[in-house]
Image (cartoon, rainbow, N blue to C red; front, top):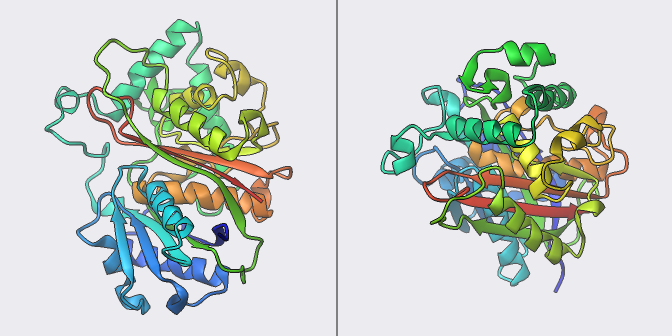
Length: 378
């Protein structure tokens, strides 16, 4: 069996585009990915679409004017893990021999919705009592700072780092440089998380990749998929340590085994930094450092762009924003560009192996509803 590889990349700017809709954004990303792969629409046998807040049949609506030939379109909604889950399903189909060439894309247009936190189900007990994502992560932050006797400066330093990275990313239209003092002085959202410690919630964007078992014809070297893992949250019936990202640690363990590597082999990562505390917790869950040592890892500079293991060179969700259907694929695009040496001013020059991690959703009784991790290499 020929190994499927990523052969084309496409991504739009991430920002507010009221003059567009999510279909237009998706079309731009898809066409860019096809051009990058050097193939025509007629060569694509199936499409996989990640989308969270769009209308029914988002994939078909996006593809309608592009001249697709009526092949299968799979629509995937797995909260913020939607695009990454669609990628996982596409990979399975290629490995089984069902298809030879597919396109995976994701998009959301949140500026067409009301502002504020992403809406969650009112049928969920946690949500009804106000345990929406900012509140949940504020509690995790408070507990983590207390347990390890840390100041809020540590959280602010994540935002400062990722904003520095984001300034080098031309698609991050919302990104502005901020000092630690400015981060801490920004409007309080849920103590201790201030506005600049939360990813922008009203953002539009799309990303797409071409996956194929055929020989590459594109502009850059194809990228291997060493691991692709999707897991769901476990219903917790006893008290839990809310500073332990259980689903991410579990998913990472499977991914490392699948890829035949460990965290020390990673050169660059894109993680789901929806809030500053998230990135600290994921350092530990992904095995970049032992429990309780994330602040030391950050302070050492290891996760900065010029460090040993840069995390979120794209700027992450904090600097780019977070259109949920596109986020997982945007992470994959970023890691591919890093591995191909196409990341411009934010290039990690020693990048040979990269990891993407994205969680999804919140329901009562579980850490997260979904987690997707991919390990990619040259």
